[in-house]
Image 1 (tube, rainbow, N blue to C red):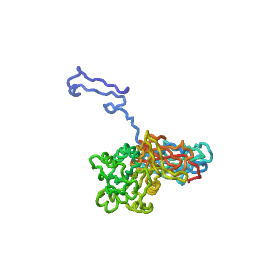
Image 2 (cartoon, rainbow, N blue to C red; image 1 turned 180 degrees about the horizontal axis):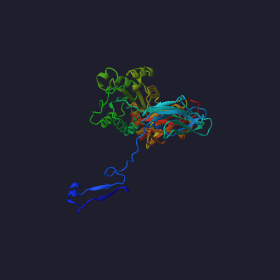
Image 3 (cartoon, helix red, strand yellow; image 1 turned 90 degrees about the vertical axis):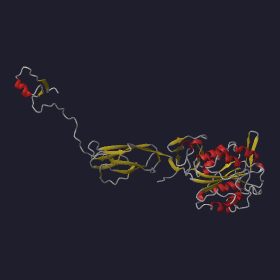
Image 4 (cartoon, rainbow, N blue to C red; image 1 turned 90 degrees about the horizontal axis):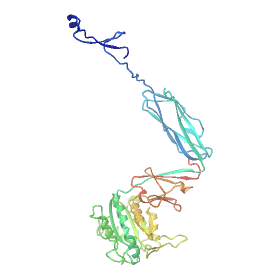
Length: 455
């Protein structure tokens, strides 16, 4: 320091007594103000002052588009005390009537670490952007007022939002019913090259599964609902190869295709306790997948089969019937399908009974005349596992181009490849490829709608 001067006080010529008294050579601080001999630095640390400290989150609010004269979904504002003394909040108010806050008008206090939430609702009265400020007043000594900018705009349409969670069964029994009649030559040749898609997708889900194959032939004794090749499980030596071998039943079976009769025989006595023992488990979900180019000729009625089939489980949602068949008949079409694939022609009659059964059990149907079965089999494998590939929307979008689709916060584009498509006839979103939600994923779909106020 400038006011402190140090000298070396070694007096070699001083008397011996003085030297002895001083005890040798010492440094003395000569300070005009006296005090200790040791030099000290003044403290630069300010004393800690206890005080309340307000924090308001979020820093701003954006309501987006809301139908004119309709209330928006509420957004939450959180007022917190991050200081170490009690915070008193005296006012929360907006400068515009378009914004409403659920505060009762009473002053309140927050102890250190406490917080309180408030909901804000936006009601636009014009087709313009409306900005307003929420002002929060308190006894915070440094920040007595906090302003939260807010905005939204009146719209002729409103954004509607739907959320879903993708689920899957932990254990599942899947029975494939393959049409092995002579009319299936071309279709079987086409589909066998893609069966690997099904088994790869299915095994990749990591489920506890039982997989089996039967045919539509109820005339030849070696078929008649009997499982071909045994029950395939995750413990099988090569599940993929075993499944492909089981589906290769040729095309010399009966031309009287009776898929539903075959399923009932396979899952009833005596076969369920003999030839097919070990396939059906009490605690597993059950899915049947039929592959045929003709409609069902079973003797059992649709009503009787449906009642028996859904009754196999105490929870009918754990049972599904799925069909890869000819396109169903409509009021303007006889149904069926035809498609040339190279030099081969895929042709099938309408699979009306199978499609009706799929629709009544929450399963899906796909046309057997597709050139590429890869995606068809992939969808069937996931659907049979209890997963959803197509989501039917609750409202009708006013603009298809403004639909936004998210899976676990990842936005996917409109695409047949690793994306999603919209079907206006079904008003549904279907996922494709890598965009398909995996078990546990959260699906969020946003789209504009017209209509009356929902709130």
